[in-house]
Length: 186
Image 1 (cartoon, rainbow, N blue to C red):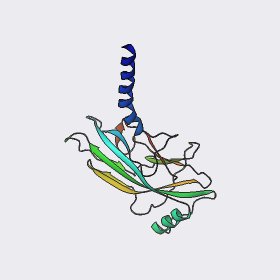
Image 2: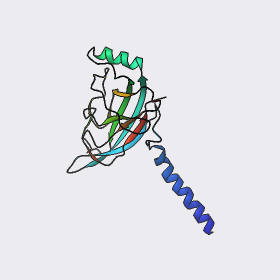
Image 3: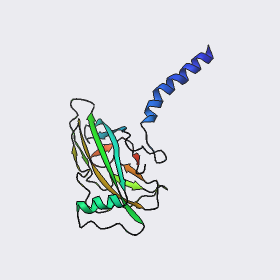
Image 4: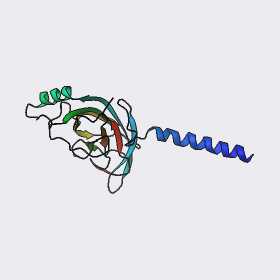
């Protein structure tokens, strides 16, 4: 009887925690292109509410094609430094309130630290100061809505596995939520 209780307890724990694990991304296990990652954020400072978010890295463009698109966005956009190349990520960000009273929006793409790139050794890369192709991932997302657009990064040309990072503590979030990681490679 004791063994049956232990086995049932293990199955219950696996059933409860495995779905939650499947939504996590980490620096060593970033989400693949096209994989929606669900998390939550807290918005508001006096009476904070929890909102659900879903982020999907829809497409990644790198190298010469990325440079061509960036130059098309603005002729003033410079070429990347020697040994570096541009990476474009087309991202969809969805925000959902949990209650009818959840009406607070979230700003996306205005803070330069909200979306960053890491080398495969997890060191942070400097974000380029360039105009992104249209539509850029910049705007205010209302609950129940989404925004989709391009984010620009500079990566080392010889780094085959750079990572994109979303920091939920920027853009108006006041707490909770996990930092999310996405592949910038196929």
